[in-house]
Length: 514
Image (cartoon, rainbow, N blue to C red):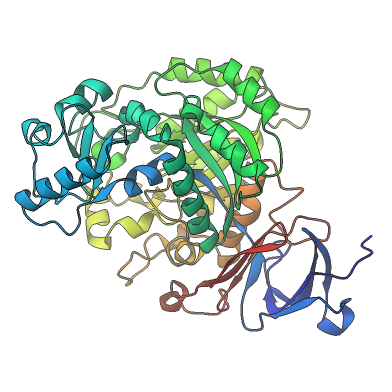
């Protein structure tokens, strides 16, 4: 099949192909961008004068990771502009903002990050610095910000509603800074490669506000180090099938493709916005958020009829059930499974009885395995006990029931909410530990280490419809793989988060090396 010698031979006693639950000893050969052979030992593998042998003994070699829920726009928003993290007083902040504004006369909007959470800047404070351009200063790790008058009238959101969907007009202007956005995307790709990620399902609001041209230019100049499957999330405009069809016709390579539509349903359980089957323990209602399920169903069925997939974000058990009811009305094949590979994202609190239908339909689960990293054990258990009670809390983050029901699980981060880490995912989703350690939470709901790795690899590629090309280490598949610094299957829970990515290969080329 291959007439030339391999470019690389990678030998390991912990080679995880994804075809079995246990790693094996072996040597994987890579010729150009293809896995050209897997051998029992180095002596059995063909080797030419230019073949580079990589000794990964004692380390894990696995398929590259896929993050199925990322927002480059969110990453851009948190890295663009002036960092106020070193400015303590209000006077220092205002002086820094004034200097930055004066030094950047050609930027159409002024954005600042990491404003001290205890500082509140009024519109008049910021108007004194800049009146002719929008100016927004964001507080870290929360959905609050300070705006000048121009920003308020231009973008139609306020200081207490700074979540992404409310800021779509700002994001549109931000992406219009094409060169700055392009540079940020190159950094974004490197950051993901550094974490062993070579494929993403990327959320773009509406028509991605022209950013697809940047992606196209990067592909044409061979600068994409990430396989980008982008989705449209209708926010500022209705679902646009004409746009979707044009994107599907234009982008369908192994590096850049259109993946369908994404939409939110309910919200966070901690804010009483998760849609539950039974009332909250301390309330008489099941969801305080008004959800237009008929509109969601209409959009999903329209997209499905046109041949596009849909992912619906659902956190409460009733929201998950309603999403399944919508998908049950979509087109199915002779095997009873959905023709278009629809998905449900998050699935924070679920009813295990729904997973049989989910598996029967072939709906893919997009879980956030690192979500526990955002909480301490004490605060999360207090929230669960208050809102659900201990008995209902047993169904929190129940990935075990998904797997046992035959649901295909893939992994996302809602980046920049979280940044992908297979190692951290094992700590939280397999050992079921909060950041500080201690006792496991709902250990019976956890996945094995192999299942977590498969969810990040094969599961992600199945989600994207690329499982015949990627997601496992098999002869003939594209050579996207990762070498970790230690044996992920042998280190302790305390050690696994310290395991590092040593090398990431994309299409047979090293795109990250520690």
